[in-house]
Length: 117
Image (cartoon, rainbow, N blue to C red):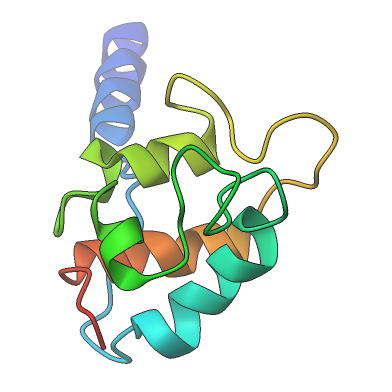
């Protein structure tokens, strides 16, 4: 009986765990002040996603918005790429990966609608 009770408690506790990031209503993430500096600082090096020399430029809002689904970070190519859940982890090679804080900013921005603000 005790084993059954422990098993039930374990199942209930595992089912109640949530690992999704809470998306705050405020502050609203801004493309210009929050997201664009992350992308420019990490993704637009020569030969990568710069305006010239890269296959997929990521300089402007229009460039970036073509790689995401507003309101659905986990379904967005951009988010999948920076978290390693896509076809290729970005940035590639020996370049430093984005910090958890930078990934969180991009995630929240996309979930908040990926506005051009």
